[in-house]
Length: 108
Image 1: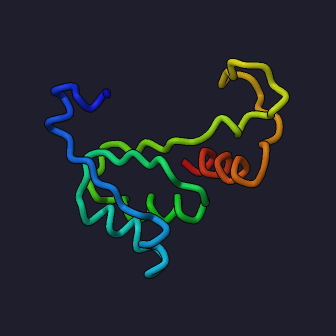
Image 2: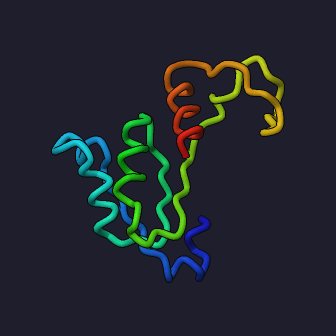
């Protein structure tokens, strides 16, 4: 387990349910994240461009040092050979989820 490394002693991991928080009020997820005043945000579950934009908007001016957005391999055309190289044109995304991920990458 990578979190057994002593470097993780200085890291506070916080889990926040995006869907439940956004159900309360649009934009509330980003606001709650910004209220934590994080140095780094690792976003591993952003599925919609509007959620991505809301998080970025809420974090602007917050002192955030790094936002890590984790996407998906599905942004690459399913017919391409592996490994996928960033220098190769992607082709078409494989589904709505992948299309949303491509839009978020372009936005970020």
